[in-house]
Length: 252
Ligand SMILES: Cc1cc2nc3c(=O)[nH]c(=O)nc-3n(C[C@H](O)[C@H](O)[C@H](O)COP(=O)(O)OP(=O)(O)OC[C@H]3O[C@@H](n4cnc5c(N)ncnc54)[C@H](O)[C@@H]3O)c2cc1C
Ligand code: FES
Figure 1 (tube, rainbow, N blue to C red):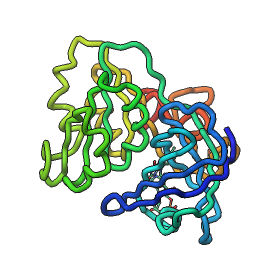
Figure 2 (figure 1 turned 45 degrees about the horizontal axis):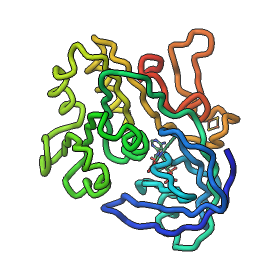
Figure 3 (figure 1 turned 45 degrees about the vertical axis):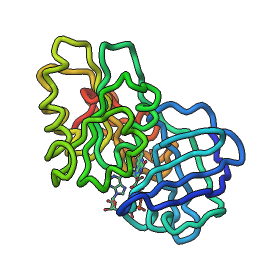
């Protein structure tokens, strides 16, 4: 892990408040595992703390981040222009662990796709992907994974199944019965809770990437703790022991 100076080569509005940021690093990053993240120092503005973002993609010294504007930091980032310098601390945290299974399932929604994008790419067509968003316009965010034939849900019904992505997964759930399946998920809290309810009876193995608020990203401030079932040390740091956790080890 290193703090690397980088230059913005693209910072493009994909659709609504979703952006694609491409950064040319001044030196290569250490090997990245799907699910790891970087802390970005937002250029300009008065945003003091770095912000955590999943590494969406990495190729030949270029890191891609897909982000949604939600507040001061991301708003300021969306205004950063080409050639602007930016510091990238990463790769950080523990990513997803892939062990041999009959089938892999990836469930994600909205900007959560940024957290599982590298995993989707590494599993190629071996995973069944369920992606949920608000409307068909938002599918522009996932254009490059459409070749993996994700099952799609939209809240307004403008494309695919009408409703939320976990409801769509539940419709297909029986096709996995009797198989050794593992689920990987990243998305809003409500989505993670629904997945838990859906697979609680079977206790299906499931790894989730949690997007807790972070301050240091380095395991120093304990500002990102997640409560787990571990009796001895219940509080785990999302930036250090996570951000990927076993769903059955955490409270949601
Ligand atoms: C490991 C990890 C990976 C992430 N990857 C991505 C990514 O790839 N793309 C992306 O767009 N975002 C990602 N996030 C979330 C991103 O870090 C926050 O959206 C960002 O820090 C918000 O900064 P801000 O200054 O714009 O918002 P703030 O001004 O800090 O907050 C604005 C609003 O957003 C809420 N908020 C801020 N951070 C979070 C959070 N982590 N979870 C829920 N609500 C929050 C605040 O409560 C507030 O209501 C990730 C977070 C983590 C921990
Ligand atoms: S953000 Fe500081 S310990 Fe995790």
